[in-house]
Amino acid sequence: MTTTWHILGPGAIGSLFGCYLQQAGFGVHLIGRNGGGPQTIELVESDIITRHQFEEAPPDQPISHLLVTVKAQQTLAAIEAVRPRLAPQPRILLLQNGMGAWEAVAERLRGAILLLGTTTEGANRPAPNRVIHAGSGETYIGALETRHQTEAEALCRQWANLPLTLAADPNIHGRLWRKLAINCAINPLTAIYDCPNGDLLQNPHALAQMEAVCTEVEAVMTQVLGEETRGLFTLAKSVAAQTGNNISSMLQDVRKQRTTEIDFITGYLLEQAHRLGLACPSNQALLNQVKQM
Ligand SMILES: NC(=O)c1ccc[n+]([C@@H]2O[C@H](COP(=O)([O-])OP(=O)(O)OC[C@H]3O[C@@H](n4cnc5c(N)ncnc54)[C@H](OP(=O)(O)O)[C@@H]3O)[C@@H](O)[C@H]2O)c1
Image (cartoon, rainbow, N blue to C red; front, side, top):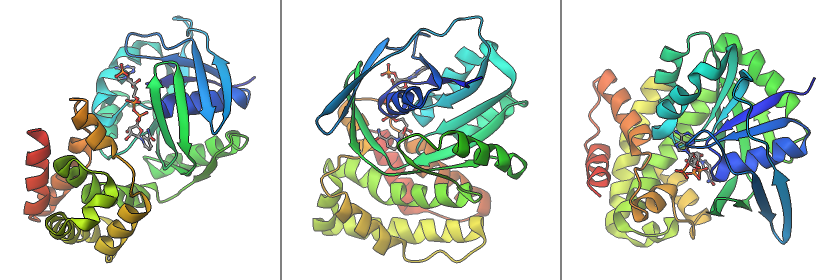
């Protein structure tokens, strides 16, 4: 029997994965903000457009496999809304930027098998029924708890036919931390200076802030991961150069007057720093500034 995936948050990334999962033969239901999702999605890849038709999820069908692609700050409310429909031991994959959204989910859904994912696929959604696959990347999946890592491996085997570069990562926490570090270094600054990633490299003030942020993040990561973390400023500059024209999701959210993911990026870093007794004044200043925007 084919697995049916319910996708909670059929935005840019959720729609992309929904189309790919359907293409690979899985049952797919999209669950948007008010329960239902778009019925049809046009997936645009270069000059090829494919149309995908989705049926509304039958309300009495237990959700056994849930892919969560809402923004980090939307996770809890979204999960609460589908909680009565979850099967007794659901597989839940949180595919989001930032860290820590899983904490409240794990607390509330004690029987669930929680998997964490990170992706560098690029997608945007110019209209609710249209998703543009803007760039290919890599997706990694691991388990929140080590004892569930075999579930992450099984999922990657099941998803082997998706047109994605996808792998299980036994050290998903380390990978999420490295992504978080780059996000801390680039995203808040792009929001504050209202510029594409690459413009930060031409702004001496922003660069000095980036360096200070990186030094603080390295100190926290070294303690959390138990291994010396170095070279983050160099890495952040090279990522900013490679993604020079990108408008970060944080800046996009600020421009659209939407809540950003800062609490799950810089905010998560600051929580861990506080727990460890480490001061991170530069990160704190950026968090304060972004939250006032
Ligand atoms: N887009 C990318 O290229 C990309 C790449 C890597 C990682 N990510 C990460 O992936 C995650 C999703 O990003 P995205 O760009 O796909 O965001 P997005 O387009 O805003 O998608 C989020 C979707 O969740 C919906 N939603 C919000 N609250 C909900 C609720 N309570 N129940 C059901 N649906 C709800 C939103 O609906 P509304 O439209 O009504 O708000 C929206 O359709 C983020 O953590 C992002 O940082 C994105």
